[in-house]
Image (tube, each protein chain N blue to C red):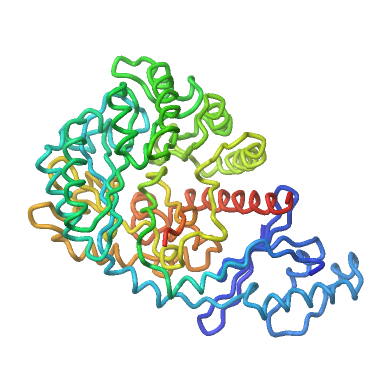
Length: 45
Length: 462
């Protein structure tokens, strides 16, 4: 494409069926403790 | 900044586009796709309407030729067809997966007491509006039993030793870790321990222990000496900076060679240091590479509380920090972390922190709360270690919180980056678990914009 560069094509939809295992860190257990920072956690599956 | 959404029969198709750091960035909210576009595509998207032939407005034709616009429209249309722009929202069904989720993490308040007197402490200098108390080893063991019993199907479990100052009760910490480790093999569990400490009691013995047993360590420091000591005072009103910085530097150095590497310097900024990027950089200069500095959570009546009129300055500061980080070798600012390729699944993104269901806090008396932020608010006590979660109505209310049940989240472009935000903050600032903490939301959106811009810049540099 000439005018658009896709940086990330991650499709959240594809994670809906396979996700939810709960192996990832609880967001408030990391380094915040006050503000929810969900999206900067990593999937550990 | 611009957000556009179409709603048709309840299906929301939303993009968010903004300019930052010299980049034109377009986020497709529902797919999670991120695009960097030129001025032509950026401007063309302003008038683009799904399902209709694009008729360029006069102001667009003043800047670009009809052929150029047609080319951009063609590329936009291709991304729409590929599900990477104006994609459908089809996730509400997935919220059901979280409602009955088993427990996976507890915050153990091993000490409702503290050896610092921090002006902004949400725990009221450690007591959480109650009496000063230390958790007995027996209570802590029962909390571990409770976690094991209520985490069916889950192997990875988390325990955070919290306070007050947890090192005031180091003996209970050690006994709890030993007990939990003894349950790992028979119950097929793996415990990950975190300790959050102000560092005042760190010594060689404790440092060695932390490096051997704690999966993560959170060390409290606000940044520059004047900023840190303005809030974080010793019992005698003296400097905590001078007391803890050498200990933190020693621990961070030794930890780099240890089994577990994760260690964060965690600070708080307030209305009194809106130039907090300087505090982040200062901590980098001290040798710390993983830094988290968060806005204070305080009632508006407090002089140091973040106010709405502070937001433009705070946004500038986040932008300045985002611009400086690439020049600081290896400096990782926690709130700009974003994993575009392997981030969390949409189910986690819908439902946030899991307070009250997946995540609970336990007090020295064995009382159970949805999380550390609720401790001391009697109406929000869920139960105790004797009876378990007795207040099932509250648990169910918390379990039902997600980006679709919080009205201010539904049309927010950043909803999949915060999962609906902090329930305790919603209650404190909005008066309801489903309300929004609007200042917090504004800051979070800015951080997400900065984080994504940094990823775009990384990609552009390759």
